[in-house]
Length: 203
Image 1 (cartoon, helix red, strand yellow):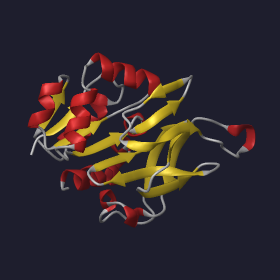
Image 2 (cartoon, one colour):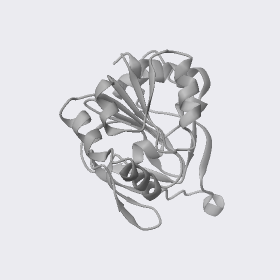
Image 3 (cartoon, one colour):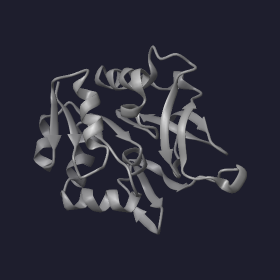
Image 4 (cartoon, one colour):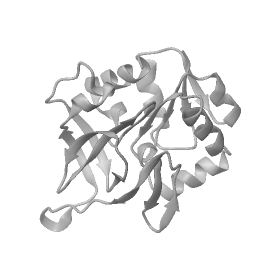
């Protein structure tokens, strides 16, 4: 097993790397499309905006190779935060930007029905429907995970979804065959986050 962490300059790359080092020694820093082939599992970290993340992936010339590894070679994939959002067809953040189009859907602004409409959603939240995803195996139903986001992925196809709530219900995690995404940051979610990463590596 080799876990490839795609390094396109995302601010949480190092924290994801450090979390993975606690559960595996077989990690690879991926900055070239040819390096994807050696990996059994691929992780795409992400913080910041949808459009910026897609622009950086284009700079690496990695998009077509990544799509091939996921759709044809069926490599196990985990997108984290913006890394989950770019799975969508398009993102609506400071414009409209084309995504990886691996999940039919759009990334929209949270419509937080809260006093003063406070965004971003930042802090610890519980989830519902964890049984829908293999990522949450042996994780307690009242576990909390750490979120920092203002946008969320709205799917227009059937996926296995785990939900959370911040002014509105939203997809906290999705799974479609070998493709998985989490809106929260497992690398910042302490023991439960490490359990989730270990579950992903066990797929």
